[in-house]
Image (cartoon, rainbow, N blue to C red; front, side):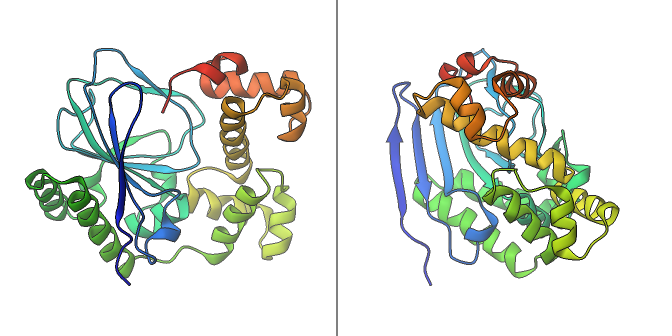
Length: 267
């Protein structure tokens, strides 16, 4: 089946252009969203990057963000970070599920946690160079996104399958917004508590408890930006003990209070 036609561009108030492409059916389960490309003028100020339950693959066609290679993978983290533009931003920003990243990259996710790694260290270096050179030679964003779709789809064909029990555990954490107990996951999969934690960390990058915190924070951050509910109501709805617990978690993972996060410019 042919890939769905690209959707875009979409423009925000900043004048930045964003382009979207629905991935091929075989690739879609490995991603948390459409393939995205964007162009912006850039600037000297750091951009806040929030923790996210996805592994980022960034392919940079213009001026790279400071201290990053042209193509890099950013593993999951429980702490905020920042990205500093050095000029015009022109990137393809890919968001992989952690089990999808494990399958496509063929690398333990535990070795990527809290790190930014050159994509060429994880995949064949010449293949990465051909991809970046091929993208730079194309002018149309739909052609660029289609090239990335084909590249990743080829990786799917050679992917190492994650443990289906770990993939199921990750899906349960996402489905329950991080509320399923680790003991329940262990019992359902027939794994010991210790074996589950070790295997999960290898293929997801975090322990199940850490992953649950990250999923809960991600949903909370999204709701803070969209909902008019009180903080106390949001705390209850997202599984925190109380509002103070939610505030501590949000502050620890974003370096902002819930009210600050609700209006902050982040990625």
